[in-house]
Length: 282
Image (cartoon, rainbow, N blue to C red; front, side):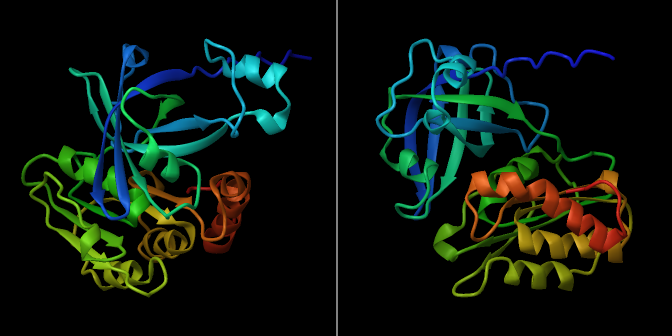
């Protein structure tokens, strides 16, 4: 019987907060730098993400920070928890990593941290991961999502070559939450107001007259509306899997720990419902 390969320890990095900025009433920007980013890179994908590590209140870890040692020596309830955030920008010259946080008041873990953290403080993280970048060979691009997908959508739009054909839809709470994106693509900003998350986005994408040619699509955000847009693209329009990046970044009623624990099963069930089985695509 073959031996199971030894699991490689997950590398963690420590970065220093360089500056913070409130972009909109509900989005806080945190820029990270420092020696921990000396060999970091996030240039190949526009949906690169990192996993920030937050320890429970009152728990102090030995230096240097070593996640494997912590998990070996500390009880499970004192392990750090992860929160995943898309890389909004990476400056390889200044070695600065920009992350944007959607704020929900005092709710959550990372949002309140982002509002109170100050330059000079440190944060531990893993990554980056990522899998999507706009394909210059595609005839046109569809990008659709809510606030959680805005950093990746903005980065993808800024990476598109001049003259690329794209339709971009971003749903936010209201006009005060719109952001400037350095792209010649006109973003359709959808203001949610009191409507359920994703309702306006679904209406807008369904109403789109899809151009001819090969489409590459990026659809991310709350899991329920992502499921419906996946049905439209994958089942109704038969867009090939390899031209789709579709995933629920989050799900109403679940924190990240709960959603990540159930996401694989959710994806498999959606796959079975929409396509009659097979491996999960989202």
